Structures are given as structure tokens and as C-alpha cells.
Image (cartoon, rainbow, N blue to C red; front, side):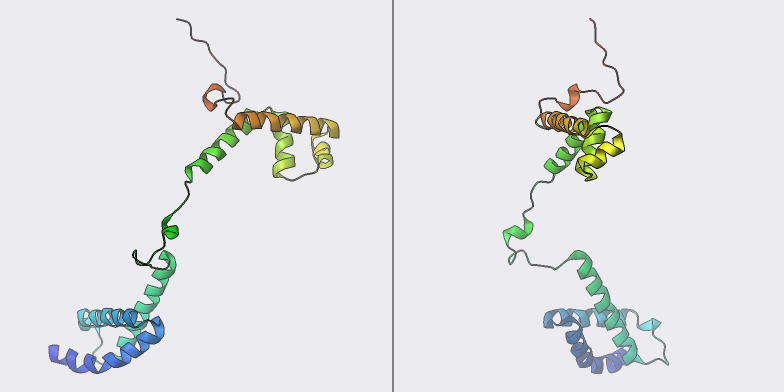
Length: 180
């Protein structure tokens, strides 16, 4: 059996290398791919159909391994040896601050009254004009402008930390005093 493998597989190696170079476009990667292909062929030799074409089977294995490697590479991204990597590839800015900012902004919006929250959301988030916002809320344009100015001011004070998150209760809760 071992002689059968050698007699059948050995003549295929140059052809497999040539096909692998075309697929991978890198000699070292092609050699690794052929090595993996040969390993698969030998370890699964018992699964090969005796009446089947060994050459087609070998090229199928090589092709499937190459496709799997390409898919894996696209999921993982380009591999760069650490010695060749630029520091900027590893450097990332801290992302915690953005999350805290978003959390504080949402809590600040929640702390606003319904009138102020509605105006700031319609104008700033939904990008409605003052006239459209006035029409939606059924109030004069001047009221929209004054509510928006007050809402922005309150939100700015909130975001600058003048009102700590812990000291402002969520809407709908009651502050209770502790008596000793």
C-alpha cells in the first residue's frame, strides 16, 4: 500500500506545485499548500475510490484547501509578521470614552422634560426644521426655539458634569430622605 501511494502521488507533486503557485501567487504559500494537500491525501488514502482518478482527487483536495485558506484569510485579515509591522497597525485609541459619552448623553436626554426632549430629538436627530417641529408639536415657532435653547443648555450642563449621573434620579422616581 505504501508503495502504491508513492507511485501514484510522487509524479503529481510538480503539477500540484504549479497549480498551487497560480492559486496562491506566493511560492512559500504554495509549498505549504502542497504539503497540506499531500498530508490530506496520505491520511485519507483509505477514503479514495480505488476506481477513481487519483490526479483529479489530488487537485480537488488542493483546490478546496486553497479556497478554505482564502476564506480564512478574508475573515482574519492580512497576516503581517510582527517584525515587519508598523506600530500604527497595533495602536488603537481608547473606545471606553465614547461609550461613556453616549451613556451620559442618553441619561441626559432622559433627564430632560418631555417638551425639551421632544424638541431636541425632532430638530437635532430627525433633522426637522423649526417650522416642521412647531407643526408636529402644535406650538408656535418661538416656543420651539426657546425650548430648544433651554434643552441644549441643560444637556450641555449635564454633559460637562455639573450634574453628576448619580445625583439625578431617573424620570418617574421619587427622592427619599434618610433620617437617622
